[in-house]
Length: 129
Image 1 (cartoon, rainbow, N blue to C red):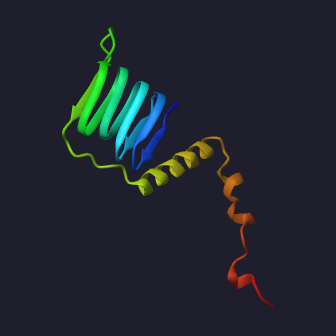
Image 2 (image 1 turned 45 degrees about the horizontal axis):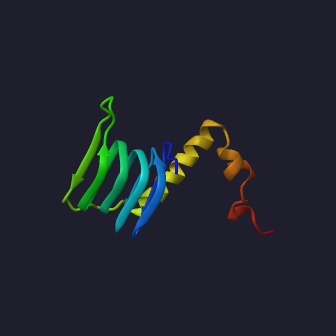
Image 3 (image 1 turned 30 degrees about the vertical axis):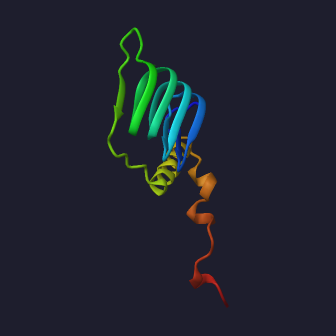
């Protein structure tokens, strides 16, 4: 899984991911990773059997990581024992739509996607005889 600017996974229960880079992953249950890198991880429990290279691992109950950080000193945050508030799915969906609209506007494609006002549906006043 590669996140980029808006890579995000939100799950109600357990999540297991083999590889994750530059993404935010939230789980209501256990969160298991083989190779996360610069990821924002949060869940009831977070398990990383390998190295977490940058980013954060936040858990309500426990964080288990074999190795955290890098030899060059990349900041890696581990935090456990604090209640987590999962992101509101509605807000996340709105943010994704807004980001897509911004990208389309930058490319000049908003009118193509939604039509311009001049080619829209006629107004009620112009209907009828």
